Length: 293
Image (cartoon, rainbow, N blue to C red; front, top):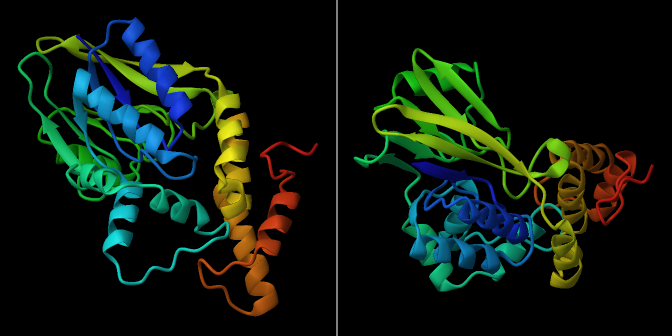
């Protein structure tokens, strides 16, 4: 039995489609989806439609991620402070392009699940950690070891960090398949994992890096309006798609520091675009996510 493990799609429907096509060509009918399906890339409805189709025609296990939690919590909040601009514009764009059906779909997803199928080894799945969709689990870290010790089974599938990894502690394994939509390293190739095995012998993981038609996404960025709503954030995202190098935290912190130095304080999401523009220039990125050197 083979199981495809997808995580951190972030609205990149072109990469998701390429991964689905690859898996279907291999005859895979079982899928684990680990959250962060939307935000950052344009046309989130295309990604959610693909996930619903996958869930309809194949055997799928699906949990939600911290990005779904962001959107669900924002919908319930009376403090609607997301606005046009690079700090929160991509979140606002996603929020405004979702339907009630999209929110209902996300609301029904758990943040953690134990999969107990007689045809496969038991395992657990979450986005961040079993208790917190936003908690990263890195190999060798104390919270990761604690999480593994407390597992009900011998394997945890998780995402969130965008880094493919397999880590064993005290006989229990944590597998991160990497990110489909905002992949790090490998030149920006989309990433996921395939588990191979059965209930008797357990699973062996294969980490996949796959090229896909990124031009589709660059065109979507230009046509969707997201580059106008969140110009610098869109540029950083496209740069990661092009290179596999993640500079979102670097650019964000630099923009915040510039704002604080000039204004004396910084209140997210009120970070003027001029500071974002300076931070992009310092990191040699243009508004289309291309390197300027």
